[in-house]
Image 1 (cartoon, rainbow, N blue to C red):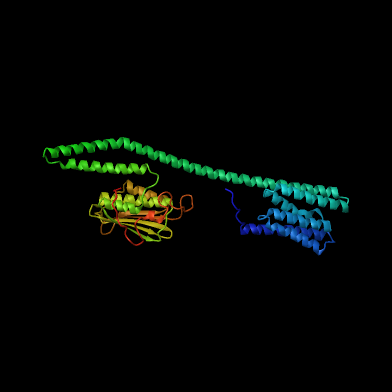
Image 2: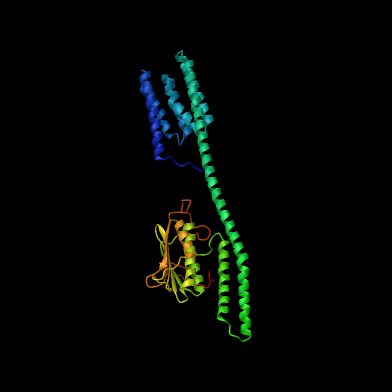
Length: 408
């Protein structure tokens, strides 16, 4: 994309000033040592011509024209040695390097014409000195073009490397999406049919037993309930596998959990703001898995609390419950806790999970806000581009209000 060039840094300005000082010093010393008749006007012209070089990055054409005009005036007035053309050589090189090769060649030709004509009128060695200057200016134009082509080659190489990196990331994401879809199809084909048959047969057996007035065996009721729960969880898993981004927010997860009969509230503290996409996804999944564990293990009478603390350098996700877990009974870490730990570690954060003193379970995840994996902190993509997506219906320091929803 084309755009305005960035202003030169202080180091670049210092280098430009150093170039002007070196060129001016060389020309002034050459005039002082080789031309006993140099006047203050000549020294002023030489100094001004060299000083113009300090602005070649910002205005190469203006520097070329100004330096050439001042040096030409010096040549006509004092008839100096070929070394006096150094400022013009430098400006021709920088103009060719900036892409103004036609202007650089034309300006060099005009200066050479004036210098050779003035030299021919004053001395007999005009041919030798004229050819020497022609060679110098030809080298200045060629090296400027070579430098420009080299810079273009480096820029093209860098762009190709960035494009290759972007292509690799897109290919990896595409392969991951294809693998998720393949797993979803396999789960659907292998499990959904079997679980549906189990649920159907259990339901038929319960219906027939009640129709005959017989007592329904508790084991049969447990099978019917477990198969129904397994179907719901399998559908939720398939939805997750078929979706690139989680749909919803922690507040929506709380609402769904309440609709399923779990007593849970949400509190948002700190300076609430949109999170980078990786941290946003991780926070959503951690709250989702933690509330799932509450539903499975804490019991219907347990109360759960979800706290999102937005700090300056990190966001803390805390999910606690008042279930039956106690410190004297260690909890075996399953795939859910392992997945939460891996998500947190991938972002450079920490996760602690275990029974609380006094009973209940606690999951605490600290997610650094140092940026996304590409190094820059982009706004949360896809589902949470505004703060309301982080905790809809929630306000800092207050609990979220619940509306009817579907259990996740």
